[in-house]
Amino acid sequence: MALGKKVVRSAVMRITGPVRERLETLIFSRYPEKEWATFILFGTHQTPDGIVITIIDLIEPKEGDLDSTTSIVRFNEPYSLRTALEKQKRGLCVGVIHSHPQNYGVFPSTLDDDMDSYFRDYFPAFGKEATYFSLIFSRTAEGDVRFSGRGWNEGREFRLTEMVTVSNKEIRREAAWAKSSAAAHSQNEYQARLEKIYGAEAAARLRNASVTIIGTSGTGSPAAHVLARAGVQKFVLIDPQRLAKSNLERLHGSYAAHFAKGEEKAPLKVKVVRDLIKEINPKANVTCIVGNILQPLARDHVVGTDLVICCTDTNHSRTAVSELAYRYLVPAIDVGVVFESKNGVMTGEIGRVTIYSPGAPCAYCLGLVDSWRATVELMSEEEKERRRREAKEAALRGDNADAYWKDVPEIPTVGHFTSMAGALAASYAIGWLTGKFAPPHRYFEFNILAPRFDYVGFDAACRSGCYCETLVGQADQGAHSSVISAPSHWPEAELV
Amino acid sequence: MTPDVKARILRELEQVTWKTKLVENPDAVIYFGLPSTLGVASSDVLVLVPAGYAQAMVDGACLPQGSPLIGVVKGQPGGAITADGKTWVTISYHPHNGGGAPGWDPTRHGFHTYLDELVSWLSVRR
Image 1 (cartoon, each protein chain N blue to C red):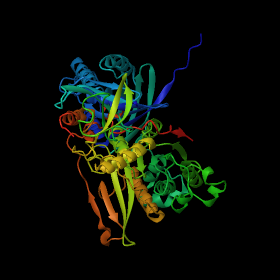
Image 2 (image 1 turned 30 degrees about the vertical axis):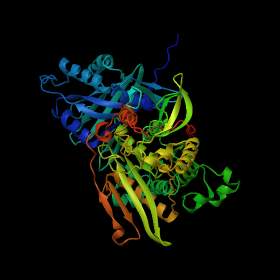
Image 3 (image 1 turned 180 degrees about the horizontal axis):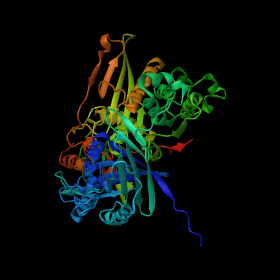
Image 4 (image 1 turned 90 degrees about the vertical axis):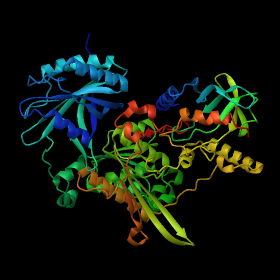
């Protein structure tokens, strides 16, 4: 009987900058000759192709938890038991990260195999989460860090391929087994100017970056346009709509020719933007999703990308990306525009940029969600109709009709300003992905028609006890406190 | 109901000592035997899970068909729905939408906090 070939799926690890810093300080604390280790607490999200693991925290060893008399790592039972009980109590996953001595490789030794075969059976017995991961880090005398990792979940096996580190200053994607300071060589002539200003490493980081754009219309299309020209080669585009003639005024990449067979046969917006990116860089890898960020298909793709640019200016998208930032460690730049006028004269063309990242306040902490607007965005047409009818009846009775229904006016936008907003979001994405620059505040707004642009910016903190503080990195295991879901009346999302 | 929504609501209901039940098709929470001071000692109340929960606010309530509380509690009676083998009458009661409760915030509110709104509702004549 022929034995089936073992399928090993890929894994991506996401970690915050502060946890990564603590991790390296700890596991390299006995360098150069001796190893050290820590247990880790993490969340997971399984996709059709693999798994994303999100590091929540280290369960650091206390005195006596690891055997300090030997140069290799040896766990004492109280430490494993304490970790297992913590896993059970919190409903999360646990694993091990240990170092190999300086200048050593990160290939698992037979002792590592023994350790993993023990722990991958031991920990799943505590609580319901069955995933176990084991990672190895090593550092050269020059400071180059290498890592490898493998994991198991109920008979499935995973190999770590990449690690994404998210901090306020940079988003760093590193390949497993490679040196962190691998030489970056110029590959694209069109990146030459950018490379001159930010350096070859920044240009390489952009080529390796992966960006999600939610909403590929007036704001999202220029964001994609700018990023493609900057060298970003991997995109996930999400939008449910087909191109309309009114989009010609602001959607980069749309042309009159798109309507040659009539408006109803115009292409999907994601396809228009994909074509735009491909015309700039035929090698670009663009995943197009016709759907909404709330839908599981979208989440499967977004959790593997470096960051999200949210261009829909809706309450539900804003909530979804702010939740992705804290639960899945996928940071986001949310951008929106508003126009104001008085007596027929424009008084405000206002842009607003919000940065969502792990540990930063969510959309609710920032007061950026209108609960009624959010509810209406998610309602079915039948329910809207029923509520409008009830509001009319309430008004006739002399009751407060607003409790039943309030109209939510659409906010019109125009192309010159949405293009600027999209380009602005893309520029901060470039700064974050390269670590070269950052926006002045995590939240700011400005009015290009006002003296000094009426700039208002601040860096608020999370409200005490809010999910953005308590659920960081919990991924799918934090589903019990999910703040938003896709309504069942929406059509299924699909890849095109 | 998505698995996330189900997980969230079950977790919320773990926080209340009252007997409750999460049902599907239609998706709703039933609170059993909530106290009332309006001529009956207690009543079951059904609350529908809104589309897009938890960002979409919990709103409205349903009383068992024939309940003496219909027309006595605040809110206009509406159509009937069937859930958990019973017929329920929808009542237009909107605590988080101008009805006296704070603005809906899914990081703080849920079916566990809605219980307090329902208990108040069953104690105040329209």
